[in-house]
Image 1 (cartoon, rainbow, N blue to C red):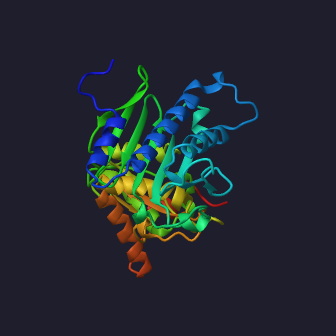
Image 2 (cartoon, rainbow, N blue to C red):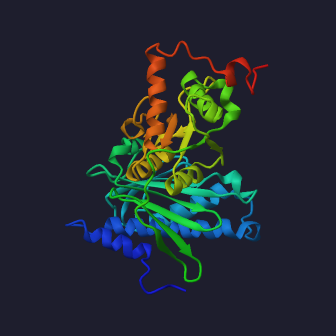
Image 3 (cartoon, helix red, strand yellow):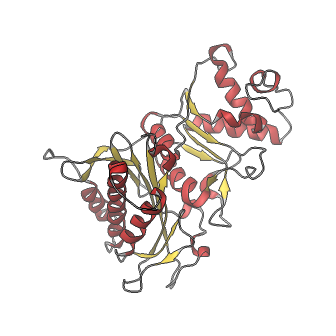
Length: 347
């Protein structure tokens, strides 16, 4: 049952529009379309194997939901999906809008099979002037050019988390009447944390700054940090960031020495930029380890980057360790955890 003073996401969007003099409603219409796409995807995931989608993967079905829902709104010039072949212009039957959307319809799809949280990621860019049929080049804008970003997380509850550049708000889906309700206004990431998330199965391939950071955390009170840390790993970028937005923490998916991983694993345009915008708007930091993610100028829609994001003090520490390595100042560091008695020896 909805209480009288609860704010729906649609009401929040309208209120944000009122704060922008000269707004035409096109941007609001686009956000409402994204809300609908996330609701439909939540239904698809929530029904699980009870919904028959013959010969179609979850990624394909969710991608189709986003494409069909957003194509009809009249706010877009084009859309690029992580799970699509190439950017698509909107249908010629619709008016050409002023915005571009990039989206990851399903993040963490493999989690769904074991009933663990998955999500959707999206961000909004302005379309270049007079572009009627956007190409991939039109989407290659640095993250600082995003005008909105958000994600949906499909877990025990379904939540929609949004920023339009004025902080971050979280909305929980009330399944009783089918609307997202504002439950987490002004999400803020604490500057400090004692929790980090990283896939330690890749530890033997990490650069020394990452090994150093994790080693110090694992040593806890007996190590140089003098504090015990908790380690987490969900294998869903959305779920990792959601935990950080709600209670703080650090997430890392660094570059490593494996073939094809030297530039990182996360897609800059489709994943890293939207989530980095949310983290920064909540007071956190988002870095490649050697610079701000949002300042990276993409050269390809599939470009990948290392990711270090979360509580500001910890991100800055990881950046400092990279700087010391690059300046040759960390030569005295040897990791007792990963070098002398590695948990993950190379065979």
